Image 1: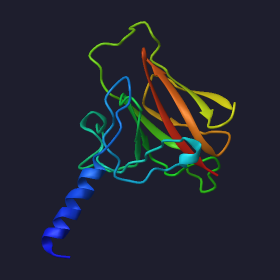
Image 2: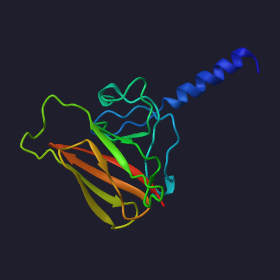
Image 3: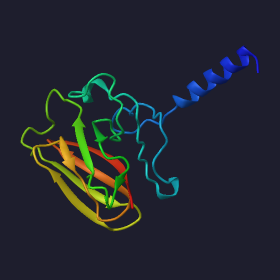
Length: 170
């Protein structure tokens, strides 16, 4: 293939990689540059990315922070995964540490709402539901789930809401 053919192919790949579907209720997160970590059959949309963290989420990281992370569907929060993949059972002594970083807002939608990050997680395709809380709002946490699979997390903090899907391996 000649250089013009390779250039056309490279340009096509870049254009296709940039195609995303916008989500309702906010701006879509940036396009993923890593593979989706879930089965399309389950409807799990856990796009674990290793691109640079956005400026609003990189406080405390140095340089070009490239750690696994998943954006909330509305782009209001990012789950930075210090343990990837997340596991239902961790036999190596590590834990499922997740740093929740919320996009800063100039004003809270409800200044009287509690700051605690409340996570209501539902196992895809089941009625299994658990609640987890992160005292003080988005920040460092250990989030374990009782079963492996795709978990749909509804997140609430300081009057804000977002959702994220996370896959827990066996």
